[in-house]
Image (cartoon, rainbow, N blue to C red; front, top):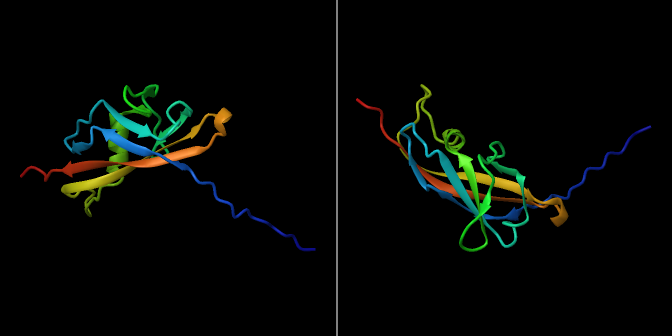
Length: 139
């Protein structure tokens, strides 16, 4: 006797959010900012987000509790600078010897999370742009 397997074709769609990082640029010199803030906004996300679900690149949790911005419906999410640097490193080209290729790169990092359960637990996500400059190695 055969079995029939049904797979749901429904896909869940995350609410899109806007993300801006501060600082917005980084020169690869080994010393990142101690805290890198991701400012996220979308109507009602700032006061409905479940902070425990927020991640950078689906890996890194905030380094401190997110807090509302002083202007507008925005949420400031602080991330550890070393975590942001690790996420950036994964997206910068390396040569055949494993050394970062010098240049200026536009790198997008994903910030995602979920609304609190009482607001449906809906996922939200968005990317923010960082400009990374990798200087040439010293002579």
